[in-house]
View (spheres, rainbow, N blue to C red):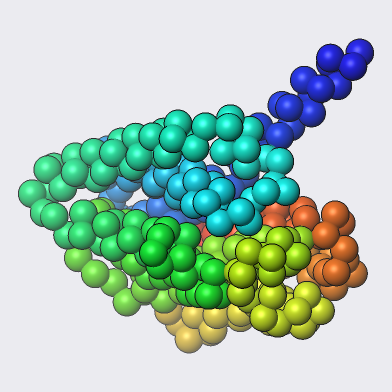
Length: 298
């Protein structure tokens, strides 16, 4: 019985370390950018879509693995039992696996470039990866200065989605840029929520995350405005005639957004209770982006 409990506990730690729900963060920019391209051109190149989707998943895996490695060097993850470095006790192995993920991702991007005889998306993806590296990677570690949310917004929003749209059309779109702002904010919301439960560890490691700077209560008070901007911008797009009315389907995401705001307002200063708020934010991101893309296709 004791052995089974230990095994169950270990399996839960591995699931928490791998963070399967977080991979919607990689998928949704590909989905929305491709949906927009379909809306404007009537076509989808499925080979390009699948190659880009594979690359995005491997890039996110690379970022997650390297973040565990870099956080282990600063000591900020000493109490994080589901850190992959802490679970394996082998930082070099995690670094190697992360770099292999990046190589696979770049190979997929280069395949698209070869098909199209155009290196534009390679440059955009390298820029996106560099923004990801700036977050935790030495000597920059801009996430420790509270700038991680800005990097996240551009990497998963305007830069990432411009690459996706270009991969389908080999051109640019102001409509895609507008939609990328919404996707970027929804993605940044997840990172913002991930700080609430680790304020003490962040302070001890010298990390000045937005929640460390603002305090948990003020951060919780800002959250409704943060969530509201996702749906407010969508509504402005529809009222202004830029987005089709069907994109209002994304307002289904209002329900998990309300749950998120209420949960964080109640438990903002209780790490154990608020630690799951980033997964509620993932739900906001998933439903709002999934149905935003569906609205463009319809």
